[in-house]
Length: 133
Image (cartoon, rainbow, N blue to C red; front, side, top):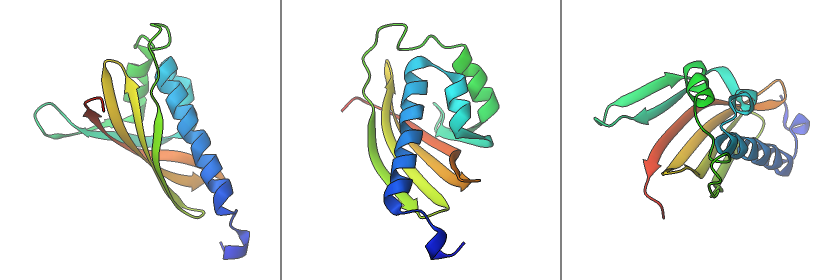
């Protein structure tokens, strides 16, 4: 891909903001199909478990867990979604750093995205539970 065929950086930022918004909506609605629309089928989720060990979960297993959840929306819980950072390498790779909640827990989520066939897809989610700030 040559530099003249790359979309303007502002367009890519807007596309990534749309991915983040879909992600936030999916969390609030506990909507596995919305998550599936932005995650690549081979992606995984990584975090530290309660023992301090790295835990990796495949996206399909995670989507099944999401389907079993009661949504924050159905419980009337307040949303608190923030895009903390969008770091984009034009045309190929991006990192979204997000702060979100699924009460009673709050998270920092880092979504590694790759542009595949003209569409940004999450290929890796790394997350940490935080205290509310």
